Amino acid sequence: MRPSQPPFGRLPEPPSPIADDGDEVHFCRTCAFAGACIAVGYGKPELAALHCLVEHVGPYHGGEFIFRNGDPFRAIYAVRAGTVKTSLIDRDGHEQVLGFYLPGEVIGLNAIYPDQFPCDAVALETSHFCRFSFPAMSALAARMPAVQQQLFRLISKELGTASLLAGDHSADERMAAFLTDLGERYAARGFSGTRFRLSMSRGDIANYLRLAAETVSRVLGRFRSQGLIQIEGRELLLRDPAGLRGIGQGLLAS
Image (cartoon, one colour):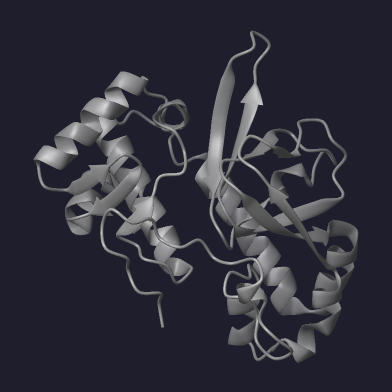
């Protein structure tokens, strides 16, 4: 059962880093591996070896680094609560936002080669993580096909996300695809897919979408006047998800 949607004007409750820890039988609700493992008959008791690899870390507060570009790669991080952005600073000192990560998603997979983190990961709000030793997880994945296949899926998704903004697309298409993708990712983790908080700033969204911040504000205003969204500060309601998906369909998977 999905959490109930709070009335608009009230922020959705973030997943609790304590209450969502599951028990001896059940996985955390935001576990990045639970769905794939349960699908092939692995429950938490069968995955005791994987559970032993997990170290709960945090809280990291907004603006704090989880890892930095060039740090040695030793572990991947699954977001338990909060939101993270990954970014690079170019040689002129300008930031390039690479992506945003929600509860249940994994950061650090792009560090497998060349064995160091190729970007910064920064908490956008108070965030908690499961940290997995990657050498130990790789050894476990060789013995457990479901874990190995889920790792491959996560790596493939990371590569697909990296190419999401490729090509010549309008500002409306990019913004519609971005909002649709966020909603669908929240829904996949059991949260509301139509009512959520934009934890990232307008500037970060613009940077990620390769747009000017003023353009992002204009597009959001246009979507609001068209009845596609309702937005108050950083709280967002997708009033017409199908309409948004139609605008951004050229950038979205079918």
